[in-house]
Image (cartoon, rainbow, N blue to C red; front, side):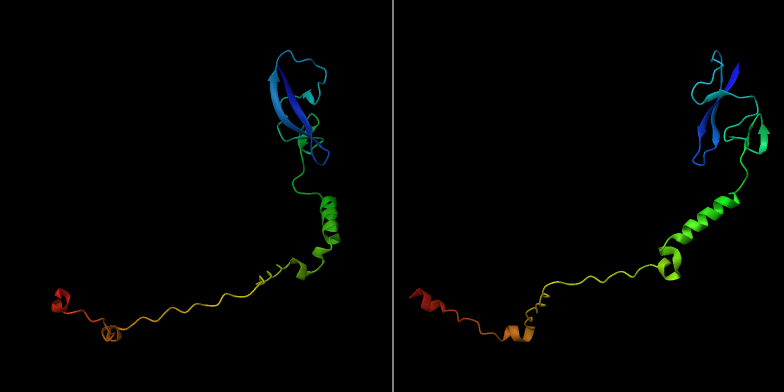
Length: 133
């Protein structure tokens, strides 16, 4: 059985092994980005990687290279907002403005106290004799 790997090109332009499979009857010619690889090549290895190299494939160096770090720092310094400490602070929220007139508060009517409620004049009831007449 032959061992084949799917090769993809990463964002940085390096060829990375993304999948490995064992197949029978696959043609020897390179089909797209699939190619035969020897035993020992693992997923994540890059072509020309220096760490644990196997037949031209190896893992990339750990960490970012100095040139990439320099490029990123230069790009960050070039941003106008990152120039000052004040730019990094949060902007205060604007207070909402009120439009129109405010509604007047309504006063509740005062309750009658028990003493005042009993003193109120009650209509006189006619006497029973007056009703009969």
